[in-house]
Each structure stands twice: as C-alpha cells, then as structure tokens.
Length: 226
Image 1 (cartoon, helix red, strand yellow):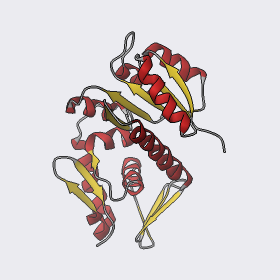
Image 2 (cartoon, rainbow, N blue to C red):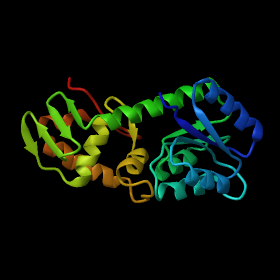
Image 3 (spheres, rainbow, N blue to C red):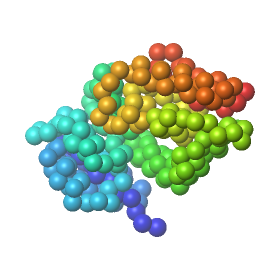
C-alpha cells in the first residue's frame, strides 16, 4: 500500500528530527521545511502531501500566513504545533481552516496517533458518497436529502451543514470549526450565521431536527435518535 506523505514544518531542527523519526517508524513518508517560505515551496512541488504539521512561530513567514496561502488553493489537512496555549490562537486556527491544534510539549506517539486518526477520518468520509442515519439519507453526489423517504428542499449551505454534522455524529463542534469547514477556510464573518442556518435546518428536518443539539458556549452536536 502506498505510504502517506507528511510535511513537517518547524524552524527547530531537533523538533523536525524527532517528529520525522516517529512518523517514519509509523510508515509515513516525511518531507521537511525549516520556515514558512520553504514550506510553501515544498508543498507546491509535491502534490501528494497528505497532511501538514505546521509550527506557528517561524522566521520569514509564520504558520498563520502559511496556512492562509495554502487555503487559497488546497484543503490538505493542517495540524498546527505551537508553544502557546492561548484560546484566541485556537479560534484563529479554526477560522483559517486548521484541522487540529496541538500545544508543545507533546508526546510524539500521541501526535502520530492524531495524524493517523485525521487521515483515517478523511479517507472514510471521502469514500462515503451517501450518508444514512436513522431515517435521514444524504446523497453527496446527487445533492439530495430525504427524511423518512420524503425529499427535503435544502439550500446549498444547509445541505453542506447537514453533511458536516452527519460526518461527525456525536462530536461537539465549535462554531469556529463549522465556519472553517462549511463556510470556506478564509471566512471571517459572524459565527451567528451558523445559528440562523441551524434554525432553518431543524425546521426543515421536522422531528429529526431535534437531533441537532446546542452545546452551550461552544457550538452544536448532531446526535443519534433517542
């Protein structure tokens, strides 16, 4: 089976080597970059990169700017690595389209496990053109949703929002992450737009709309039926 390629971007050579060693032992191909500019160069030259591990604080171009540039043309998974644990940094990361946010110091084994989980989730989602959950059927290719056999008329964003919920059943999803995944990676609008769409989506799904639960202070969770 073909190995996945991971791009490790960090200005500390010891950190790159540590992460590289653990990823290589876990059967990944690894590419490295020592700063933001080099990261963009390596990424543009290698179209098979499956995931990027990206440090925030780097010379020439920091991780946020690298993420912004990549998100202009790619949805490759990005995991941010940072020595800071500021909540605002995490929110910025999700708004830019970051898939995961890991604070240093971290366990290399846990990092590898997170990388494997993200890639596995993406591959599973990509292989499922139709999602079904207790009476709700969503066909991604035909862009059709049926509830108990009856077609439901959803707007484009309502459809994308429901698809994202159904791909992440049982997971509490922050509003910022929903914005980055459903409303494009560079969207910086008011997170309350999600609340408006959720309200409409609940109404159109009828009784099954109650499966979209509000997680106070965070966002939403799509649950299995009671």
